[in-house]
Image (cartoon, rainbow, N blue to C red):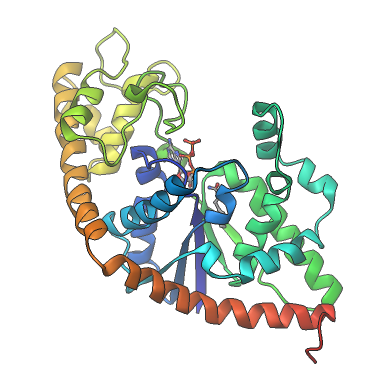
Length: 332
Ligand code: ATP
Ligand code: LTN
């Protein structure tokens, strides 16, 4: 049986970009993949590489987990859990720090970017973050890791660390494969369509949050930036705005972009945007109602407890094996 694993940070709120680029893909995978055990976790330990407010973090952990379930992740098919509830992540993280070289960590572009944005008080864990991510993956012998391309370098490092450890101590870890969602699924900002839709952007009109009020959602779509030639054609270079809207439309329906171009050949942007506004609202409505139902119920704790139990068995067994190979403690 194969294993699929992925993590998401409980920072901020999830956008339509996160949904189309990640959550919707997970839901598809859970239904398509046969003979595969799925583990998805909320990466709360990763969140504290930068300062967090404790109340907000607590709220976000629950909220992100509830959104996952609301978006269709089936707790009977997927083990959903919170990273910090499985101490083996941090423990194997330390072993990975003792496998990786400082130079490797310093070369990570995400580290360089984030470090550049912060003037002072850069936490050590921001540098060692990829070692924890490697541990997250290797602890479960994950075969498939769905990630965005921003995480590609971290996955490559994970593969190198797995091979390095295996060569030094004998076969221990499965070397994981990345699973990259199609570049077509990269959703761009509604106000600056050459940039990706990001929840950390300053202008709230640039993104759609999964929990945005639906009237607001419709307005954001209707006021999305497009060009002035009025043609509904996919051309991300010359017409990034309308191309992005076509991508969203196609991702939320059964229509291909080509079909959409034909359907809207004689229509103007206004008509297209009005239709898309309804499609996005229709997609979000059931997610929102399920979300509030979950947040107000007791089901979520059961789901996370169950996920943690499943994860714990795998993680504990693996860590014992690793400690043994390293000669740590008194385990024989
Ligand atoms: P930020 O917006 O603050 O940069 P983020 O939304 O990229 O953060 P992550 O936790 O890095 O947050 O993303 C979670 C997942 O969602 C990743 O797999 C990422 O590739 C995907 N994702 C994020 N934004 C988009 C987007 N605009 N289009 C498609 N996928 C996205
Ligand atoms: N670094 C990832 C989140 C993440 C992850 C993982 C993804 C942490 N551990 C393990 C896949 C596998 C991010 O910031 N998107």
